[in-house]
Image 1 (cartoon, rainbow, N blue to C red):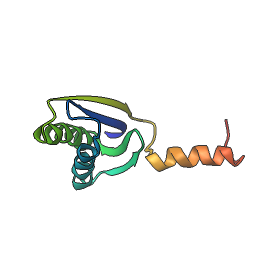
Image 2: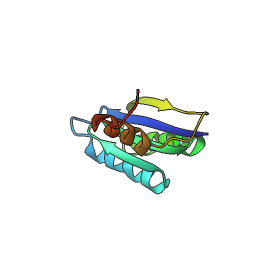
Image 3: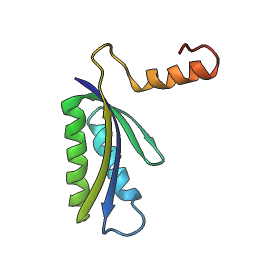
Amino acid sequence: MHVIVDFCIVPLGVGVSVSAYVSACQRVIRDAGLDHHMHAYGTNIEGPWDDVMAAVKRCHEEVHAMGAPRITTTLKLGTRTDREQHMQDKIDSVNADLQGQGTV
């Protein structure tokens, strides 16, 4: 099953700056070969369900290995069975609507 997730991992007990932990997690996602786009408060990831969930788990393992005693993660996810849809499709649909080309 194809899934699109919005993933935000927050290490706790490591101080104010978390960029090193986010960078480590970005490398995990990149190395998994998943399509992803980092944004200011997380990362959108898409791909096969098992691969995406394995990457999320690996991010937790990596961030703990870096010394974070606790992690909180927010994960929103969506799947479809009626058709295949990718992250860019969703963005393109809204952009078309903004340009007056979309339908309701």
